[in-house]
Each structure stands twice: as structure tokens, then as C-alpha cells.
Length: 108
Image 1 (tube, rainbow, N blue to C red):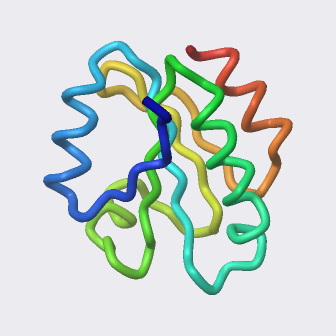
Image 2 (image 1 turned 90 degrees about the vertical axis):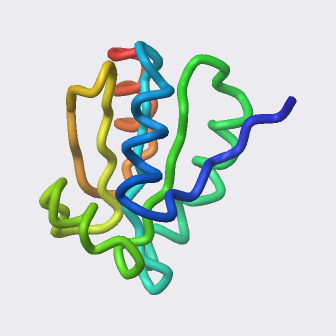
Image 3 (image 1 turned 45 degrees about the horizontal axis):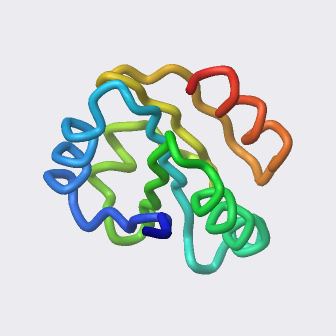
């Protein structure tokens, strides 16, 4: 089965996905459809999701899920949040693919 980036629909949806993930690293990509850097890094994240077996990739549209944006205090896009066992391990903003890769390697 080919893994893809899953789109979060609501706060309850996110909570359920995080609970199911357990000890698996979850990377949440907070993006906006109008955000140029988000569009640039998006396809790279899709490829990474296909290649990386032991990491769950989620996308949150900041325009559709304001409650999640407020909960995670997102102010810039893209912002990546790394979560394991329900705890935030790290967060960074910007379309920095190398930093994304190294942060995944650090926490998975």
C-alpha cells in the first residue's frame, strides 16, 4: 500500500489520528492554498510520505481548521509540527526540506 499525506478535516479528526499513531512519529504540515512556499514543498512532502514507512504525514489547511491553528499557535506557513505519543517534540516554520528531513531522522 502506498502511503500518502492525509488531510485533517477537523480537530476531532486530528485527535483521533494522533491517538491511533501511538509511538509512531507524526509530522503535521500546516499550509494555506495561497502560500507559495507551501506549494513549492508540497510535492516533496508527498514523495517523502511514499518513501518513509514509519512516519505519518498529515496536512492541515489553516483556512479550514482555525481551531487547530489556534491550539498549535500557528502564525506562519508552512509550519511543521512533530508529535510522538501525543507530545510535541519540535516545531519549525519555513519550506526547508533539508531541515524537515533531518528533524524526521532525529525523532523517528
